[in-house]
Length: 196
Ligand SMILES: [Zn+2]
Ligand SMILES: [Zn+2]
Picture 1 (cartoon, rainbow, N blue to C red):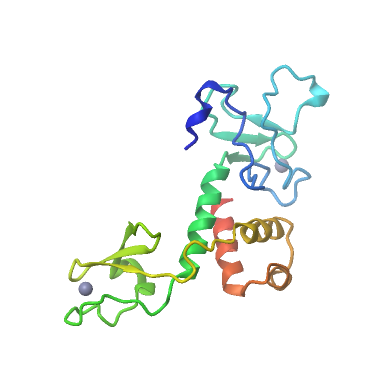
Picture 2 (spheres, rainbow, N blue to C red):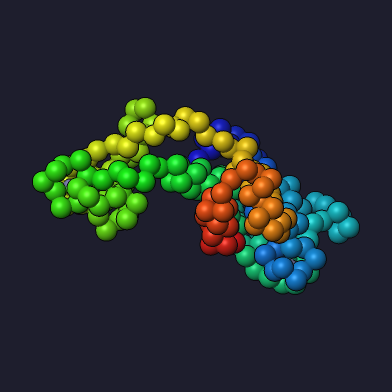
């Protein structure tokens, strides 16, 4: 993912990406819930300076799990970059035009929207202009979906929604504050739950 890091000391846990840091205790009843683990090595720190987490594999890399010292909850270390990428992907997905189907009139998928998913279509990368490409599973033809919103990403909204979700804001409030629909918030919420 990050090719410039080879000569730089590896952080203890993945560093924050675009204000996203998901490596904290996932136990809602714990005082450390939502308190991110430190990215700095804890080895030389005095006891009072250490954060509230232990690494399950000592100081050996790659680190896979963190243990909360308060509640002993064990949770896998997640890539913030991966989460960010996934949020971007969801955003893209939500922008897709709903009524696109296989353009071949003689194909039985001709009237079946790509929204119906994997059973009928396979995601097939992107065109040079950034439009999503699909392959029809029936006739094997590929086609792309022109998106009027391609290139108009709103990453600041992702950050905002993610933060509001992490702060347990009511969903209606999130819609208001981020100026998005409930469907958008739900998608991101489902993703957050799955990745927690
Ligand atoms: Zn905890
Ligand atoms: Zn087809």
